[in-house]
Length: 73
Image 1 (cartoon, helix red, strand yellow):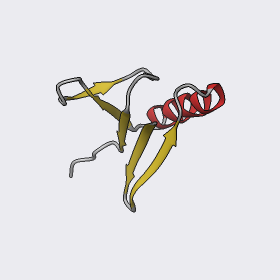
Image 2 (cartoon, helix red, strand yellow):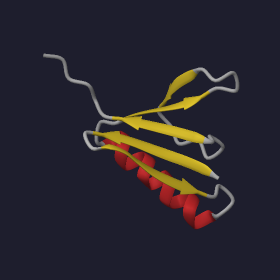
Image 3 (cartoon, one colour):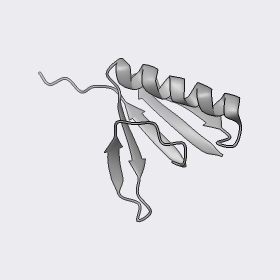
Image 4 (cartoon, rainbow, N blue to C red):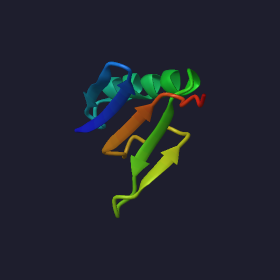
């Protein structure tokens, strides 16, 4: 099971999906595009565990973390 974790001011929301389920995959891709389109940054982990920013939906990623745009003051 793959998971998308969305960070916000309330904590986080998790959405699991089966990458082998076409409908679930389509829903996850739509969520990815909606979040990144509204200013969230998406990050995945490499095989060695290093985080990397991603700009395209990767159906093979086990975990994608979305965090909101940070604003300095």
